[in-house]
Length: 321
Image (tube, rainbow, N blue to C red; front, side, top):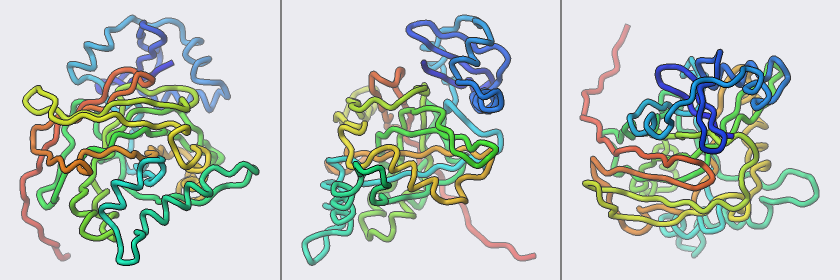
């Protein structure tokens, strides 16, 4: 089952090839909270609502009418975060940016820690991953909308990932709604200057959708990351995800995010990105304004596309009162 959110209001449920509006709900967030209150699954609540109007999901997506699959009505209560060095091929690209004189970068040390302790078999929680913050819901970008690189940025590059969406229940328990495709847009040139600039490089928008997969994450995800320029593919590479291709379990990554009480405040929405091993930057590719990023994987329905936009320079001043 897949869910999509209309920018104008309304939830779409796709099962198989048929997509229908879900009667009685204007947002996926509202739907999820109603399911929690009624103590039923999303599927059961949708079934109880009855069959809604059939819609053409492909046309709606192509016309830019779909939003992020889940969005909080108050952007300040939607948190975008993620983990890195979580995939079995993710160390090589990062290590090339951060090698130290001793021959092993902090990135490689962190990666090896994940390989050795990210998938514990004894029921205990494993080693904690690299973690980063991307911002609030202000930085959550809908499919086809622009991923804006600030005027001071040194680069704007894609990161094809899988993201989990979570709402915090009234008792402070995180509840996973589902998974989507994500483009964890970053500034890799800034990051390469010094590993301590990683936090700066991540304070960028990210895009999600168009469809939310409700259920467990497939163990082996075979996706494709593309960059199109003037309608032609100028860079393309497969990306792998799912636990078969990761050095951490999803449960371990979830634990090390939600172990903090700050992230378990009732009513909040969290979007947590699980990392990637595939970057055009690692191949020496340079993006330019107008390039279109495309992230796709058969398990997640429609592809996610966003153009790269470069913001105009604006004057900066701190006022006094």
